[in-house]
Length: 446
Image (cartoon, rainbow, N blue to C red; front, top):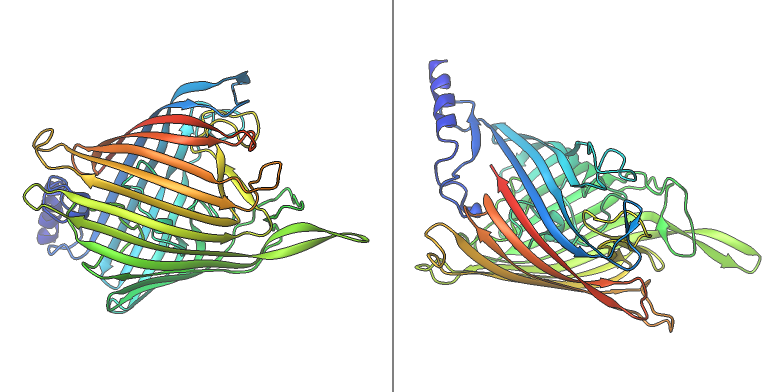
């Protein structure tokens, strides 16, 4: 017992020391808040908590309302994410994880009643699963509310170490529709076979479209009781990435040499429905959800003396949600009225094709100070969605450009991110306007 108590004290004293967090680019942080349960530290409980606070100037889409007032721009403040995660292993064969928190709270939305105000947001469970290792690194299985997703690397992205200020959102193709904030209830299997890393899952879809809305344009089927099948496979040519947890790193800040090519899918029988006009009336037609992605990821140290590094990611998505399905999404939308294209919303997810790419460069150390690093980046997405057309019937592409920089005060553990976005305003597809959005993010995680 004395040895165990000594181990607990030592673990708490060393919670911010060590060199186990190479993916985070910080030697100060070390192994994090890790509570050992035996003197060797092989049994432990790990705690992670983080906040991402946004200060943002946004030029709104035409006709946007905030607090029932017509607005053309705002400066607002919000909590993009506020989370707590814990996981533990009493043996390498077992793992239990719990992750909860809030997202997207500002003064006018994201609250307990999002339609009214932003007060008292609902803390909810993001992840809760148990896992059992069956055959070394080859096969582990788990069950619960989980994030072992298909489609792409970015569909499994960690929110702690993005290269850019955030994900493009279309990577989480069914977010808060048939899933719970990119998570589903089900079972999964994961593992590594040589350099091939895989994850597959079978889940229940959450009920959605409870208003039973049905139209000629495909919408989610509220009578969907079919399983959701998904998987993601990536071949890791260089250094191997950990798959202890599902959260895939956005940039290693030069601490790892990684080059991967991946592919994934999501399938749900009769997950959508729509109205089909017939000669003698109309029928309700059900359609499958079929989503596919292919991608590649590169994180390459360049000059070891200067600790420079290149990070690049590219993905192609082919989405089929049924006829002309489109979802307009505005992240932490600063306007709450004026239709689905209010505030900073634009057509984000739908049936069609999307190409996405991002690249960043970690500038030489000592450029600013000994500890502070600068990492400029850019990202661009091009969406060709079947349901976005002008009055002539021609497709109108959805193009979004992000340019920014991470100011890394202590790796990803303490950083500022400044991002400029050029965003389309689809109020009138025949006369497309582009609106600026400038965001400063302050993030700390422990």
